[in-house]
Length: 296
Image (cartoon, rainbow, N blue to C red):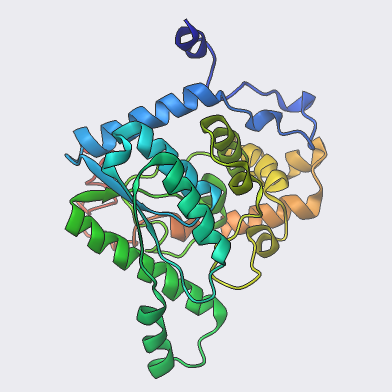
């Protein structure tokens, strides 16, 4: 009976802007049981029916996004068909490994730790000793994808992505790295919605509560890089993606500087959310006209 009741409720509530409190997360509230059920079925459909895989793998950082994906995958395919790879660099927080192992132990999924420092440092030391921390972070992110896709070939398991909608709209990922896995269950969930779903599915509170970080630079946090908290950014992103103009948001009570900060981040990173731009010479240009959003 409970399942039927959930189906009568919308995944996202209908929100009328004039009654909105700009400090409220109400527009971002989700029907967590229904969203969980939908994402589990999405994973099964995309991985098994469309691509013919029985196994999946993911990079497990110990953060809430990858932990949530591990929980979803364990439910969708059974823990025996899920592989989690923890890939620390020498500057990674020891807590990341601890939290990743906590998830592995709770779910009973397969796991392996592959240290990427011996892969990354020879390139930097020999060819790019002056590389900035940001460049090193990008190198680490791409090296992790090399490992993940090689393990995919070894295990015959499909890589699953872990990026959320807030990160994607901000362009807060390494191009052709974090965005590379072909299936992503969290890509249409704002960070605040990820937290809601993680709590519902039982992701440990120590993981849900800790400051979000890419863990590529010592002391780095997502919100420190953004210049705005996820809660504030998500409220603005929600209405921008609904078609509201910055001017309308400001009229509704959102601070002008926060609205423009968020809007500028979205506007400056559109290119990261698309495949490489093709010079079109025909009406069958791949990725422009020829491919449908989902092939047949």
